[in-house]
Image 1 (cartoon, rainbow, N blue to C red):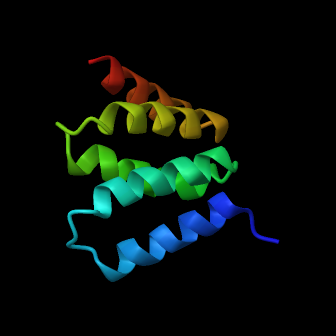
Image 2 (spheres, rainbow, N blue to C red):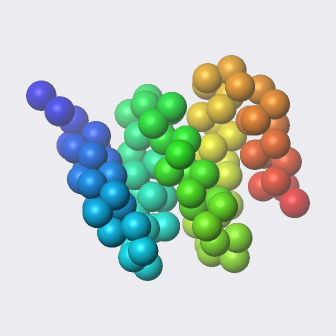
Length: 91
């Protein structure tokens, strides 16, 4: 049985792929990254969180996305990338 959060993330991935120019891509990516993060799918969360961080530096979701990105990188023992995400957050 697929966990509801993972199914939601899969649906969000399909939406992002089908509508790459939509104004909803960044919020969908934030939710998708968070869903994967909460389910331990850290590698799958990273591209979604990076999209949020790179896509809209003034958006209120960038701070939380940077923190989650740093956490994902730390879990995967990608220490320099984790440190860079946390350092960027602190700026």
